[in-house]
Length: 423
Image: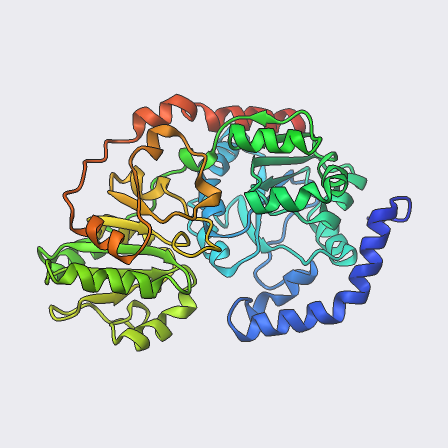
C-alpha cells in the first residue's frame, strides 16, 4: 500500500514531526509498559505491527474497523457490533482501543474471536499507521466520541477508506481549545463522510466551528446493554454482607477517595453497619488505596469481614456486580475541578439511586428522563446526607429509552451500511 502523503502538506508536516518525536514516543511506550498501561506481548501493535494475539484473515474478507478509547466507549458499541455482525454474515470487525482495560472489555463480547477481533491502535505516526492499514485494509473506519488521531484520519482519507464518527462530542475545554484551531479541526473532520453528535449542544458546537452537516441521533450509551452480571458471585457476596447497607463509590479519581472516606465516616455515626465499596477508575491504584485505608482489597482475594467498613474493589469487568450489590451509587470524576463525570446510564439502567458531583462536563447534556433521577452532591457532608437519606425509587429506564434510542442502533446500522461495501 503506497503512502500518499507528500501532496498533503499538513500530513507531510505531521509525518516529519512524528519522525522527530519518535524517540520520545518510544520512551513513553517503555514507561507505560513499566507501569502496566501496555502489554509486553503486544507492544508491537502500538507500532502498527502484528503480535501473537493478532488473527490471520484472508485478504478478501470485508473488515470494518471501529476505534474506541477505553471501557465506557467500548461497552457502548456492544449492541452496534452485535447488530452489524447479525446483519451481514460476511462482515468481520476489528475494534482498536487505547487502553488495556478497553481490550479486556471487548474480549467479553460473545462474538470475540469469531468475527470480532482486537488490536491496540498504533501511535499516530504515518509509517506506523501505514503498517496497520496495510495489513488490515478496512472497508471503513468508525471512530467513537472524541478519540481522534489526525495523521491516521488523513491517511485513511488519502487511501479512500470511508470515515465515520458516532457519538461525537465536544467538552467545554475541547470547544475552547478548538475555537483557537478551528481550521485544523475542519481539516481533520471534513474528511468524514458522516458525523453523528450525541446531543443538540454538541451539534451546535460543531456547527459553530464551521462543520456541516452534523447529524443528531442521540447518545449510544443510552442504548447500551446492561452491565454484565455475575449471579453466583453476587449471591455469595450477599450472603457474606448480609443486611448491611452498601454504598458504592464508582470510578473514583485521585483526590476523591479522601472525600468519599470522609463522607463514609460521617455516615457511620448514624449507620454503623454501613459498608462502603470504592472502585478506583484505574485499578492499579487499588493496592495503594487498600494500604492507605487499611481496607481489604478485591484483587488480592480479600473479602470484607463484618468489622470492615471499607472495601477496595480494584478488578476489571466487575462494575455490574458491584452496581447490583450497591444500595446507592456515587459516580466519581465529579468531585474534583478537573473532573468530567462518568456514565450515569449504567447504574440508572439497573434502577440504582445515583449521585454525582458538580463537575460532570462530559455528562451535562443527557436525556432528561435520566437526568431527573441523578442526585447532585458538592462535598463530603452533602454526600453523607444523601447516603443516609431515604432513597427515591428509580423507575425502569425502558420508557426513557424509547424516547430517543429505541431505534438508535438500527439507524446507525443503516447509515454505516450506506457508506461501506460488504461483498
